[in-house]
Length: 363
Image (cartoon, rainbow, N blue to C red; front, side, top):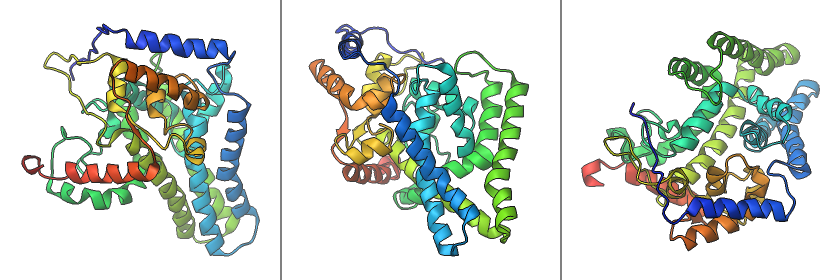
């Protein structure tokens, strides 16, 4: 793979101006860029939605149907923990204290993920090379879904508008089974890291041990405590993951795989047309910015424009920063991609999948 180089030419000084205005906002309002009591309260709520139903299933005698409903609730909580707790913490914006970020960032282990893999895939590859084919793994679904016009087309993509939603639910269960092992092998081989390159032996040990603990907690423990058939536990485990997977996948797609965003490529020398910050404006979109529930539950991931330009600022500030970012972008005649409602963004996403599913010469 060639090295990607973003332009260093920002004649109008867009990012310098924006950064100055954002810094002034925090200074004038005497605010920290990290989380506050609102975020910590929400973290408690999300962890409770995720873990309390599990405790109830293990300790209270109830019908199978109620247990099934509770596994769906757990999936909602699982996605909520990922978006509101793990995400901020592993961006080091949850708290100003490193140990707190590390502690809550480790919540990814009860979500079936791995800290090292996530930081490389998300913080390094996705946030640096947003929507660039072959560099941003978030737009690479193999052969089964075509997220970019630069990806190879297969006949099955004619139907991706219809079947993709069913595959979205497999996101986190793939973490639990195969993805982490594949990613770790690839990232360590390529010597990728977010910060200092770690010891491969240590990372492999952490991965194997954490997976064994994970399977023991979510599969072995319920079988032993509930004394039920193993396949019933696996159904509940799958339903929990499938619920979380659909939520997380759709929210991500609405931010990057929609008609308003671009998928630019570097030139033959690996040079990109725009600076990194301006590139984020072209490749990212917001949705439902004024919807209180969406803002609360998605951990500000509906404000992806703000998040991509300022990934180390906690999401609790994005709603206020959005006004600054939007005004500055428009002032510099740059795009500020936004869908007013979640419904509109979802419709646009699946229509875009339909367009990408057409054979290229017919598209």
